[in-house]
Length: 168
Image (tube, rainbow, N blue to C red):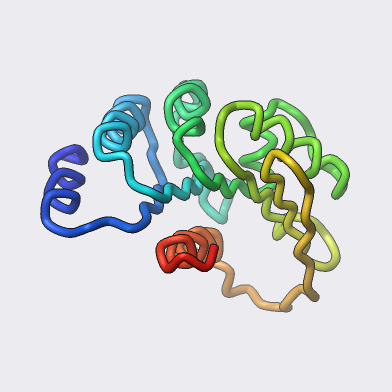
């Protein structure tokens, strides 16, 4: 069904960017990866959604290997939060320096750029971008709110829209 939905979109309109969100199982990941390889969109942003805000897993544990092998190498930008970056790298992240190392390790898995999102860390919100050449930091004061549902999806969608418009 996922493949047919992708066919319907790609065969109907010109696609300037794709944002991939939650893929819970290896078969879903394999199908999405196959279609992305077939259609070869210009910009692919992958938000590797692994956990709900309450900590419940949204991805089968066995799927992480498939994510790394089949989906990550297709990403122009991968946007894991800290817990997702920890799962992908198998390392603990306790500092901005750890975020930098995680971004470098994930980049070696084949994606073009990585943004490790720092929303789960204490203090000001700081994201770390690694594009294979340099590390960039994007920090801002944390907004005190409990309304954080969907912020990662919104962020990755915004990245995809900026890439589609040619400003990314």
